[in-house]
Image (cartoon, rainbow over all chains, first blue to last red; front, side):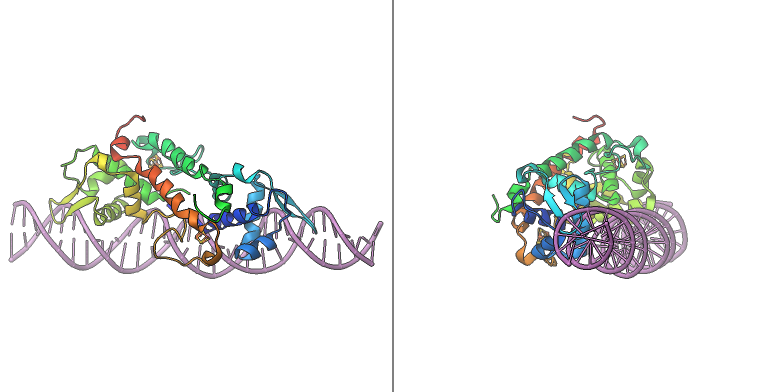
Length: 137
Length: 137
DNA sequence: GGCAATCGGAACGAATCAGTCCGATTAGCT
DNA sequence: AGCTAATCGGACTGATTCGTTCCGATTGCC
Ligand code: SF4
Ligand code: SF4
C-alpha cells in the first residue's frame, strides 16, 4: 500500500516543474539537478510523463519539455497513473486483466471497484498547485 | 498503486470469516477451502492477522482462530496494515525510516502525511460488515 | 503416555522494480 | 547544404520484494 519510488520522484519533479510557470522550457538535466533525482531515472520519468500526455516533448538541441495543463488541472492521480499504470486496488477492478483464480466465487469483488474509486478520488483531490507550495494547507 | 495479492486474499478470507458469525471456530484449512486461497498461503495470512491482533489463535488439535472484534469494527485499513505494514504513501510519511535521498530539500514532503491520511481514511470507511454482504451499497 | 491436528517460522523461486546504458532524432552552427 | 552537438527514446542488467512452499514446534484429545 505504498507507491513506488518512481512515482514519488515523478511527483517531486512535476512539482518543481510547476514552480517554473506554465510556459517554461525544461529539460531532464535541469529537473534532475534541481530535485536531486539521478539523471537517467529522471529521463525515464519525463519520457513516461510525456507519453501519458502530461508533458509536451521537443527533441533535438534546444528541445525539452513543457507542461501541457495548468498546475491546478493536474492531480496526483494523473501523475501516478502515468508512471504506475491505472489505479486499481485489485486485479478484478481493472477492466480487462481478469486473471484472478478466485474471481468465480469471490464475495468481495463487487465492492472493489467502489474502493478503487474512493482511493482514486482521494488522490485526485490533491492538485499540483497545492504540492508546489512549500507550506501545507 | 495496487495492494499486493496477500492483502487481497486476506480481505477475502476475513470476509468469509465474518460470514460465520462472531463466535465461530475457524481454522486455516476451512477458510482456504471456502475461499479458494492455497492452503500454505492461507496459513501465512492467518498467522499475520493473528499477530496483528485481529484474530485470536489457539494451537493444538481442535484449535483454530476466532474474530476478536465485531465485523463492523474491522476496516479494510486494519487488514491491509496487518498484512502489508503501515499505510504510508512515501518513505518520509512513515515515522522512522528516513532513508530518502531527496528528503533534505524536498518541497512536497510536508504534504505527503496529509495524502497518506486521506488514503487511509478512504480505506477505513469500508468495514468488514459491508464487504461480507454480497450486494454493493 | 501416545497420537493427531494445528499454528509458527524459515527457506526457495519468481516477478517486478530501480537504475544504467547506448542508439535515434532534431535544432543550431559553419 | 553538411556537420556537430544536444536531447529524447527504448532496450538491457542487477537488486529488492513478493508469492509460494515446506518442515519443525506446540497443544488438545484419546
Ligand atoms: S475477484 Fe476477489 S480475490 Fe480476485 S482480485 Fe477481485 S477481490 Fe481479489
Ligand atoms: S522526502 Fe520527498 S522524495 Fe523523499 S519520500 Fe518524501 S516526498 Fe518522496
